[in-house]
Image (tube, rainbow, N blue to C red; front, side, top):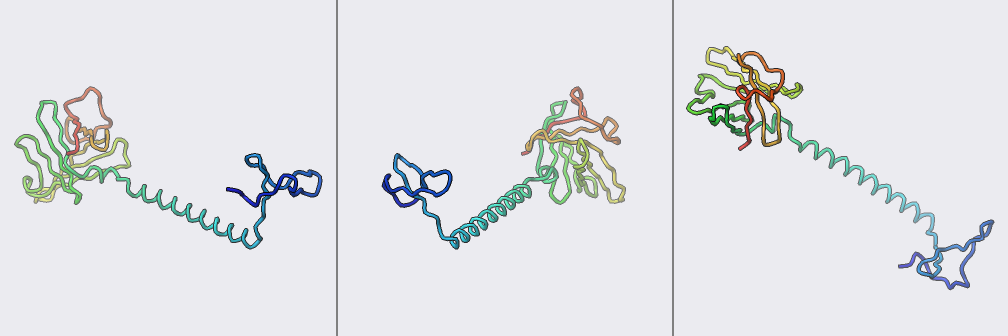
Length: 188
C-alpha cells in the first residue's frame, strides 16, 4: 500500500531551501511522493479524531465506573449462608439475609427471630479495622442484646469471626493462638 503516487527515482520532487532533501520517502527501495490533503480535509480529520478520542475517554470512564459499581461491598458479600467447624468439632452455620436479619445454627441450637420471640438482626461497620459485626437479638419485650464480634474476609468465600470470652465486649484483634473464641466459615 502506498502513501501517495509513485514517482520514478529521476523525477522525485525536491524541497526548496537549505536541506535540499527529496520530498517523499523510501519504501522497499522505491521513492514515493507524499501528497498533502486539502486544509478542509485536515480539519475534518482532526475533528473526527477529536470526537473519537473524546468518545474513547468517555467509554473508559464509564467502564471504570461500571467496574467499581459492580464490586461488592463487604456487607453485600456477607449475605448468604456460611458454615464452619468449631473447636469441639461441631458444625456451625450463620445465615445473613439481605433484609438485615440473621440465623445461627449449631447442633440442636437454632437462634433466629422465631426462637427468641422477636428478631435477630445483624449490622456491619466496614469503617473499623477489623470490621465490627453486631448480632442484635431483640425479644418481644423490646430489650436488644448485642453480641459484639469482629470479622474479616480471608477470601470472598471465607470469613473469620471472633467473639470475646464474656460475649459482651468486642475483641480488638484476631489471635493466632485462640481457636475457642473464633471460627472460620466458608460460604455455601
